Image (tube, rainbow, N blue to C red; front, side, top):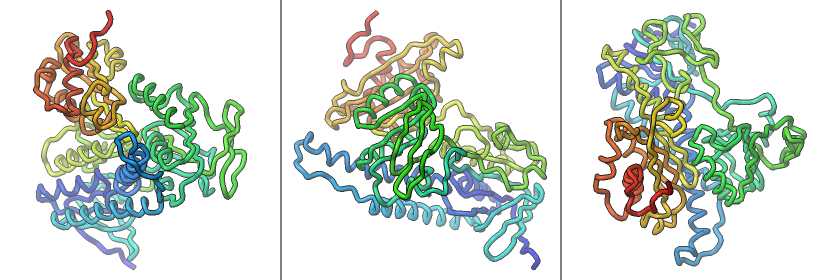
Length: 469
């Protein structure tokens, strides 16, 4: 049977937060766009990542709030988490957002083809659909195929007790015990969820500290907080071998010789990039050592007319980065001149308390030979935070000593993921600590902590004791 043929000015492969945004931006610029997706609109972020985890984290927060209600003068009974109902709520939210994306694509006249794409040439894309092959002739292609949870050969993922983050979001019964391999963003968020639901959580981390890519002060304080919640954390340890798989659990031998036992084991050791099976090698598209598609600041590959964005390029694996890369690639594909700038990218971790960062940490500034001043303010000294019952954590501003410009910020505390954007804009616009500290902030508000940290960089914070010389 002959393949169906179509034509489009642009084909986007992958409908995650990079792909669907690229498709809409290109359509806004007048392009006829075909968007190919083999699974679900919204990709990992909407269906198996950002949104589902935040939905379950919101449920976990409600459970913990009820459990602590007596501290607010409210008497209630012990909460009874219903994980099945929580998962149903999570799925409903994802479906609502998928429908919203579908409507946006329709409104922008983007044609969606459900199937698996492969590049036959820079200007021809084959799509295997349930109804047969469709070949789209095109002028430009944007690859946005994303990533999957990385897997280690140590673990048999066919065993029901072994989970990736994908399966970790689909459990309908709360496990009594859970081993989490890896204490990065994903591992820490899952630890927060299941600990709140009553699971005994043990985290196993290869590196000397949890959240190893974060500022050391944040890492140390978060470890204390998680320990206080009853989460066991083992650092500088690996799982050497799986001793036993059972229907009701596993036994794992650590590099220390200790054997851990749990109902479930969740592997969260990073992402594997989805660049295979696309026909890239045949086209001569340059790939890196991890299989990442090599691109320039315009998101162009070495093959003219072929662009790549999002996780598959192996840079900063964040949904909002993929979206901005998608806009950049779409504009360049449509004849504009856009360049991707990664200098100011906020990153957030939705633990309790939240963590957010942007720009340089003190350690990174030191590595670059930049002399800095550090301004810190603890949420324990902030009226709004204490009124909320959220006094843990701090704001840390990194300020260039010679210019007073804000270079970075690390926040651990309530609504850190929202607060960080004031500093992101400040860094982008070259704002000084003097500017931030002398900007009137509403009282009582959490944002006052940023103002106080800016003043602390000049050793004149009103609501903090002077630092010892």
